[in-house]
Image 1 (cartoon, rainbow, N blue to C red):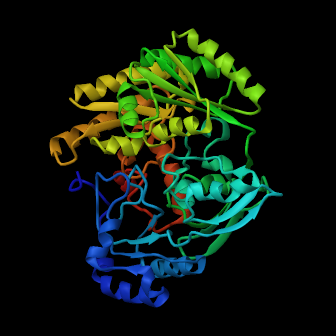
Image 2: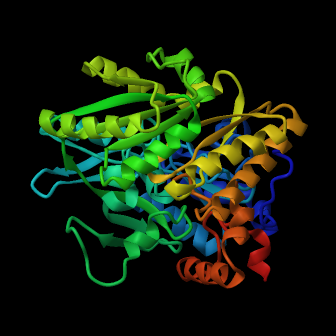
Image 3: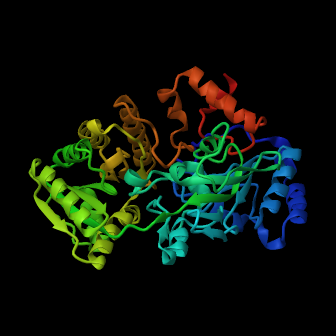
Length: 478
């Protein structure tokens, strides 16, 4: 697969000046902030997508906004492409470099700059990990709501680029719902501030445009995020069903009743077995599907919601109902879910898809997903955010078998098309990157893509920022 990836044609003048570019960047950055030796570049060849890899021109690791601006000004002046990179956990190939590009990594920008409990905000550098915000504000009674499964490693800059979500997005929303401001370095090196500590700001919603733009409109170096007061308590409950159809129907019924839990997570039989073997969370192995439903509030509030949800689950012949009885048991339940991707990686290579569908289509899409993957002679494990219909089928295959790899990619494309046909979209939180780039024309008409590209070009007229991602390559010359 790595040999078939398509980028925009490399810029020959840039490649020819590689040594000169490295020498110039050495003048702009401390010695430890520039990676350029061939062996040292290997870790930056790919990201969490792993299906493709490419070696960059070099890697810049600035430690301040001023250093980011200096690199961007230089690259703008000499026409050098730039690929932003956070922790490299992207599951859509969003951080895979190009041979003529400087990878601009923000991992050294990892300081929490300000915590303001009175305004319920935290201001952090882009390289701060997701989980570290909650760890920092927790003792003061707060937390940061978006919680991707990779929250221990993924960074706020990457979360903003892909508009990441997580299990608790059902109640609290995804990154865009918790982002108040950014410091952005533009393509030409100009530094601008958008938004701030205020809950809203006048004018166009530029912040909404930046969040989810996949590093194509500028480089976020700092972010001001919303922090929330911790709830009185939280309690996850396991529901086991005979079939995935019963579980997905239960999800629709719970949401349709007006009850909004903090999270509703889904696992099918394959995913249950994989996660239980790794986490030993006590998941039932005799069911066809599992829901993790978490509620929060006072003891009385949680009990009231749980009884209503249990009553709904019984309408769909729920086989197992297990309420967590302690903080340790609750942690074990979530450890199994949060470890799903890593646990799957222990037994096979996989491609993780990221389509989103209306809740009423969950049953249909789950059934067709199984049929699609089986038709290619492969296996699939489904684990996803059921409450908002964000599907994450994990297609298992052998990455060293070119035939299997091609089948897995084709199966993934068919599943994403299925999501669009069902009234959903190509991505819920992983972004488009390279993985879904050539499917954008399946969801959007030509004029829609042209309008999106016009907005992108207004920020980066020369198309130097992450230039081979998001939009189909052929659309650039249309």
